[in-house]
Image (cartoon, rainbow, N blue to C red; front, side, top):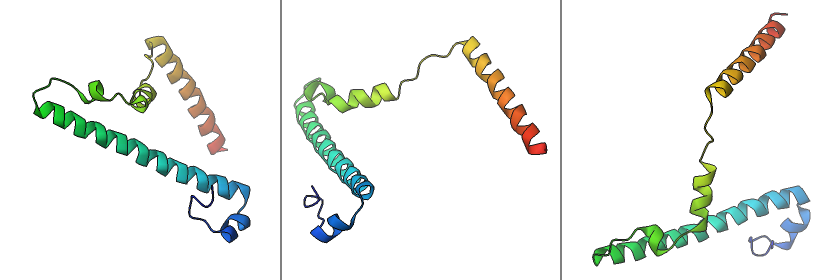
Length: 105
């Protein structure tokens, strides 16, 4: 793995496990982003080609990408009821009052 990351033996053997893991995680994230960007570019080219010929399609119709659904799900928030909102406000007020009393001491 270190070789694929462009590391020589010295750098690999002198790194701590935590440092190596963090470097590997960063490298893997970059590779994953490149992979996804490549598929998104391919999908866009296919969409433009199909739309140019008069087809009524969306990019999602041509190539559905599984990580798009994951991002959309991650951006969804559950509905908050008025009671939950009021309870949150009361709890926040109690915490704020406690912090103020500690600061004034």
